Picture (cartoon, rainbow, N blue to C red):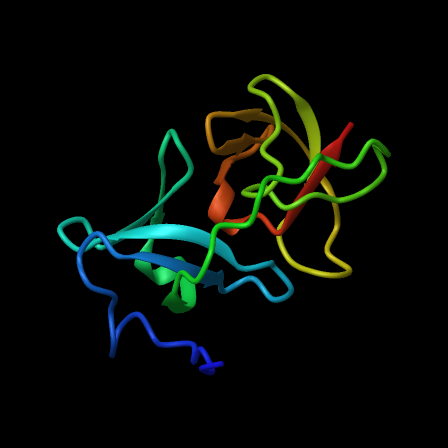
Length: 132
């Protein structure tokens, strides 16, 4: 079995439209499948698709296989990754930007953006969320 080495986006970008596995800069965030769009310098994720700028990705490697979707945790106190378990639009949530001891911030989710009373945070800068 070949070892899959993580690559840097800046020095070794994927081929245009290549399906890849990416790691976000947020420590402890799980890898996610995405497609590289060279024209916009962004990764596309999900059926919508959501755009993740190149600078929000620390590493990539060719996609080996797409993992089947998992059921979201039933316990409302469990923190969830915003890409693997996207909240429904209009959901009131708590979000954390950095692991593991960052303060939780109250927000509302709307199409890949967590909206707080002070600012909006795109999903790619959020480490995790849970229902409020």
